[in-house]
Each structure stands twice: as C-alpha cells, then as structure tokens.
Length: 314
Figure 1 (tube, helix red, strand yellow):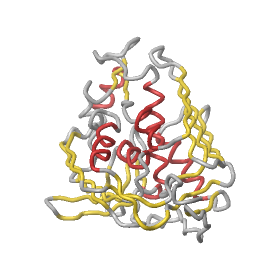
Figure 2: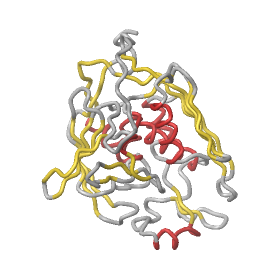
Figure 3: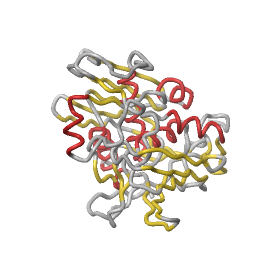
Figure 4: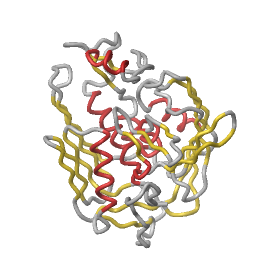
C-alpha cells in the first residue's frame, strides 16, 4: 500500500466543534464540544461539570454499561454517557481516529435522530491527517453470536463491509436488508441522514421507565398501527434498515480501531452488535492489529474482561 491508500494515516478533526441539543431519553439540554486529538488518542468522552473534568471514558466495548434502547459507556466511578452510537458512527463513518468528546451531560444529544448534524459539522471544519499510520483490527477467522432467531457475525474481508437485515411484523417496516462496502462517501450519502424510530404503542411504557422523555417528531420516526406519523414521511424508502446499519457502525467502533472485516446481522440491535465485538476481541486467535500503509503487524494489544477495570486496546 502507498500513502495514496485511503486511510493510510491517522486522522483527527481540523478544528474544535461545538454542538447543543437535547437527550432523547433524559430530555435534558446537552452541550458537546469535539476537540482535535493527537495520534493514538482514540475516541474519548470527557465528562465535565461547570468546567471541571469528572471522567475520561474511552469509547471501547469493555466500558459498555447498558444496552437498553441505546449504547451506554462509563467508568468505575459510575460516570456514564448514553446514546453514544450516532456520534460514534459519524466519527468512524468519516474515518476519524482521534477525538476528544467533551460533554456536560450524561447523554449525547439526539439532534434530528440521525448522524447528519454531526457529519455536517465535521465536514465544515475538515479532517487533519496525522503523521502516524492508521491501525486496524484485521479479522482473520469468523466470529458468530446467535441469540434465538437473531445473529451477528464478522468474517475476514479486505475492507469494511456491512450487511444488515431487519424484520418487523408491522407492514410499515416488514423485512428490509441492505449491504454496503463502507467508506466516508457511502456513510455520508447513504446512511448519515437515517433517523431513529419508535412505536407509539411503546411510548407510555418507555415514559414510565424514564426513557424517551426527549423524543418527538423532530428527532424520531414515529410508527403508528399502519403508518408513519411524521408529516414529512421517510427520508428513504428503507430508512429503518439504514438507521440500524448506522447504529451498528457506531457500536462496532467500540472495538477501538477500525475493522477490516465483513459484518452481518439479522434482527440485531445494540446488544447483539456489542456481543459480536466482545466475542471477537475475547478470541485472540480471531484478529490481529495491522498498520497502513505498510500493513505491518504490530504486537497484539492486551485484552482482558475478567474484572471491572479491564484494559482493552489502550
């Protein structure tokens, strides 16, 4: 590979980005500032309160604390950040390796329910290439996780391929399947605008559980008995599976490095996505770390899940 190879060098955002919005589950106002970061920083959430740093949480699967309706990561002092998947999808989808994500709340803002606002903000400031080569997790043998009639798997592949299938009983969704060879252009144009969705029949139950308090027709595709309730309709005929793929890209980013592999899921979600990443990293014979442009194998990074303070891809 030469330096012309896409993704040959690590990247970060060119300038600071400030965003504000509302947490879809908390309903609370949120401010997020994305900061450029140096080589090998990874994607890290800096939880602050009145300018004071409370926590530094790497976006890694060993930091996952909850997977109910969204992905929640945290530390051992019970500091957490929820609904991280849409922002992480934007960063990984646009091939951003290193970024500090400063946040003053426990939930990433939902914005319009997609990654579009994050992508637009990143595109506005641009991307900076750093001196060091990008590191990848290269899948070298298949890993599969089966949960009833749902499954997720990742297999060896020279790039990053996504194949996602969903199947809902409601005729509004039904069975949808989508596959892409992923790159920033595909993410930007085919996935980034796909919004999260929910069923009106679940709303009261979610509210009683303290969830979806910030959900509205401005940030969620609302599904009634046999129709979409948003007056503008859908952005894509298959917006539902596109959003599920967007979610999966965010969840797979918790591997720590970009993946060289082909991911497939059937009737999956945050829990299954996370379990596939965890199963992959726990089987040290299933992956290796390579660098571009030389694609030089590097010593395998320590992965452990035995205790609460596990180290992974640090």
